[in-house]
Every structure is written in C-alpha cells, then in structure tokens.
Image 1 (tube, rainbow, N blue to C red):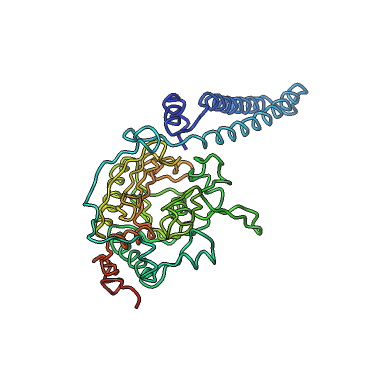
Image 2 (cartoon, rainbow, N blue to C red):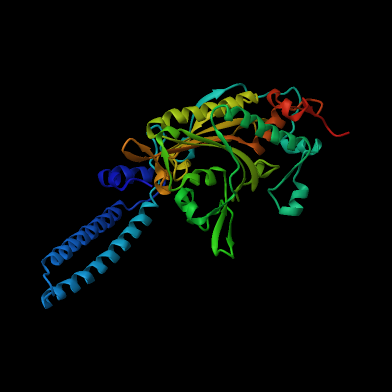
Length: 426
C-alpha cells in the first residue's frame, strides 16, 4: 500500500506508474474520497469541541435550548462518524488497488522489454545427443509422472530414489550455507487465510481479484467458515509472520530461509513447459525473506542476488541475469531480477530464481514497523529464491548427463547424497 500523503503530493507520478504496470487507477476519485474522509474527521473534531464547550456552560440543570443543541450535536456526531467510517473503508479499498511503484531502473513495458544485464558461464555442449530430464528421470527410475497422473492428474510427479536424495541434499546445502550468513531456517504453514492474501497484495494484480485468481489453489474451511489459500511460494506465509509487530532497530536485518511446498495451478501453460516436472502444480522451494531498514534496501537486494548467484555457480550452471519490465513484475513488487539457468533440452535459459523488493508496500499493508529512536517506521521487505528444487533437479540431470546414460552429481552435493553419480537401473 502506498502512503496516502505521497499520493496527495504526487498524483500524476502514481497514475503514470500504475499505467506502466498495466493498471488503471482513478487517482481523482481517490483524492476526492480522501478529502471527504478528512473533512468528516474535521467535522467530528468540531462537534466534540462544541459538545465540550456546551458542557462547560451548563450550570446545574441544562436549559431546553441546551438540551436541544446537545441532542442535535449527538445526532450529527453519529452521522459524521458513520460517514467517516464509510469514507475510510472506501479509501482503503481504493488504496489496495494501487500497485507498488517500480524503481527507476525497471524497464517500462511488457515482458518483451525485459533486459538481460549479465551472462555467466558457457552453455553446456555435448558430443552425443542429450536427453531431456523426463527421459533421464524415467531411465534412472527417479521421476514418475505416469503413476502420479493416475493418483493426482496431470502436472504432478513422484520423485524417487536418488531424486529424493538430491532434493534433501540441495536443502541441506542451502541451509548450511545460509545459516552461516545469519538466516533463520523456518518451515512455514502452507495454508494462509484470505485476509493475509489481501494484505500481501499479489492477488490484487489479477483480473479476477483475490478469490478467483487462476494461478492459486484455495479451499473453504467449513468449520471456521473461512477461505484458505495454498501458498504459491514460501514468502506468502513468511512475509506476514511479523504482522502487526514492531522490530527493535537492532534486530534488523531479520532474515529467514524457508523450506516449503508450493502450489500453483499454472493455468495456460503448454508445450515443453508441461512435460515432466518443469511446470507442475506442486513443487518444493527454498526461499529467502529479509526485513530491513529502508536505507538498507539496495544493499540487501545486492546481497540476496549475490547469494543466489553463488548457489547457482556452486552447482556449476551457466546462467543469465534479467531485469524484468514493469508489466512483468508482480503487483506489490518494485523491482525483480531473475536468474535464468541454461536448460540443454530447451536450448535456452529458463527462470529458476527471482530476487525482488517490495519496499515498504507490504509492510504498510501488514503493519510491520521498526522502532528508531523516538519514532516508528515501516520496514522494507525483500524476497529471493534460493532454489526451486524441481527445476534445480532438471538442470542437474540435463547439464550433468553422461554418454553412458548416467548423471553426475555436483561436487558440493556429493557428501549429502553419498555418491558421485546416478547410474541407470540394470
């Protein structure tokens, strides 16, 4: 949520930024409702002053005229308080529809305007015809999508044998590295209340609104009579962990590394993306979340991006960094930089990591602050992928495959897996 004072002082900037993100915000209406709300509050204060003044004048029994005035003022007060509540609720609803403002370096436009800012490493070349991850997974008996389809439908998969060992090797590798960097390991809930989704703001960027967002799964708890959402990434339940709390300044930065399953309907995907486990409805993920002071936002962005790149490099992948354009970043985000890892079977780089800042946008909606001297300020909240495990396993299988059908295991993971390669079943 944007600061209403900032909107009053910069209406054209807010209108333009929303348009750049593909939104349509009625700034004039917001300003008008805000003005009506402030006028109602002003009138309420005046009525209270009139009532206090009358009470001071009454000496003994009030006169009929004084009683009549008191009665009218009380009625006026009830009416103005109702108007103030109505204007406040309408203003809140309108403010929730305004996206976060993109940072100045974010390219303007749709995803065709995304900008490659760095390439690292050389894409893997083979002296034999390489297989894709599903062919390798089935040959090695470590991925099974056919049986998963019988149980759960399309776009699900079983990880088996060494694929399971790889998953938990990746988890252990990340936890060992990031806990040394001061991150608190956490396994968060995967179900969150509808109110929390509204505060996060991701769902406001959809045409269908919160309840019917086509990318996410939701269910209704009949006992509690409330809607619940399955998280699409761990940040959905980690970011609101400090809702309505105030950090001591010395506690910042506060960093979490979360391991969680993620659930996405991924509506509209097709082709190679739906083959195997590249774009599935359920996957596991390691996500970094940081709470920092506003002046440390840029430094934290660089830190999260650097850590993510280190992780990719330690697994031996080539990759590129991409700064996403305004219409390709999500509703609450001010900047996103993706890491795209080379996937041989697709002969291109594919997104495996995203590093984003939401500045103070989500903090305002969730009321997360920090105490600085004699005042409280909103924190800045950032998030970044450590590893989306399914796609990481895909990258390992395809980049480390050997001519004999085996797959090498990246050196940094070998001690956790307990072997140096995965060999075909005899």
